[in-house]
Length: 238
Image (cartoon, rainbow, N blue to C red; front, side, top):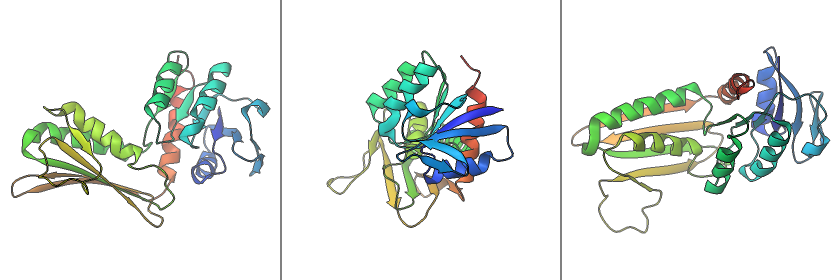
């Protein structure tokens, strides 16, 4: 049995984690959120200092600004951490790398298996197509998502970047540009609306042909399942 503490337990993904953990080898022992209380009998604390339950791993689905406090607690208790929040600054990513020298840290912009398959396919396509195709990435999410572009879109772009024969420039906005598209661009576009869970598409546009690779998340459960699997995976790692 893996006992987890969920940061952001009162949010949509936190509640989904609690639901998805039922009947598995993962037990949600407590949570930390803005307001103390309880959720389905699980104690919720407003501060890490109040936590008294046994914890084997932390899962974070809160806000990137809370990362320093999360890592401080994880380091003090020698706990592994699954960081599933997106929108981290470079300074915050540096904190994760520093913490990973002392505790296991699993960080991903997207916890679904399908997205990681999409990245692998996109890398294969980019390596085969080389300089002959323009690359664009479109991501769509619900109207309450705070960061743009999504962490997943950046994961896709970074994966493609690894195999390109040139150094790409990520372009997020062309409204101020009055010139032709340069050959080294990767366009990354964000759409926000309604209750869209998550849509990602990679477009390779060449002369007379277009290749599209896409992924559609039909519910939040797949992200929760991925995070729970990550917690079980890293709980005994060095």
